[in-house]
Image 1 (cartoon, rainbow, N blue to C red):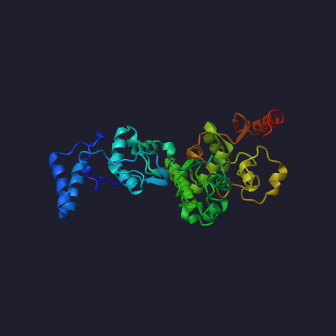
Image 2 (cartoon, one colour):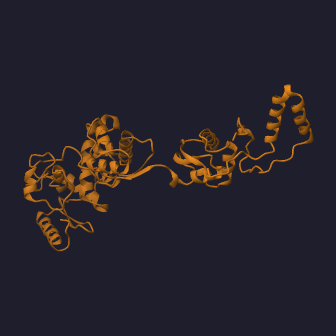
Length: 383
């Protein structure tokens, strides 16, 4: 079916106006021209062309009547106008005419909210059906991937491989050359901690490189929101060190406790209250050295097995050399803006509720540890 309105004249379009569906009778003079076209063959093309163009002014926009056939992956580009969408739809063989799409869009009050992205359509669809699909964001063709807070790179890659068409090897290949991801210079090429935990909608053209880059871009947004670099300077740390603190906070705390845990970490790094000064003794970091996710209680044997690791905060003073996992917004904000307080110790005494107790007394700290031990023996199998 041809588009009786091409080339499309945007100046003649009136928003909100629906064209009639029945062709009106042509004036008597046009009937005479038809007769002349038959008799005067030399003028046939000129005369009939004129009739078609004049007749268009009294006809409805060309439209397909059926549900369509086949498959068309159609993209709405950022900034596309309704007219441009209509032209692209016609060029793809989805609608019969630009006017039909414009009419259908004007009739649908949700058409102004059409989102950029990819949609699954068919050839030769009714324009009204096309608009119905485009206005519903649930029809966007995408892979929705949720990356929770506190995951290591290896865990993040596993989720990406499970939720997209790419394999772990595809993502690992990109990570072997992390310079293409936009990591900050202070990350020193290590993506650990910088693949930001969030929900992502990846279009069908997304690649492992673009997905991982999007995650680093989202981290940068969180860092800017927390004013990370200035906060690090104010606290006397490098941005990389602040990100490492944020990762420890993410692993060890939740909610309102996060700024207090950040303060404990800074206090243990900066103040010498007891023989353990400078040793953070953060179990999550030792678990990272062991190559596993967090376990509530470490054994001495486990700690000793990685005694030489720079991530063993029981045997090595100071911060680990890099983040141990990806912190979210709250953990980054807590590391950038820690609470004020004298605490040197904390113990999560209830793993179900996350109840965490803080103190600057070593004796009280030992009592808190006994509470955790009793909890593990009587109420939990997570220890």
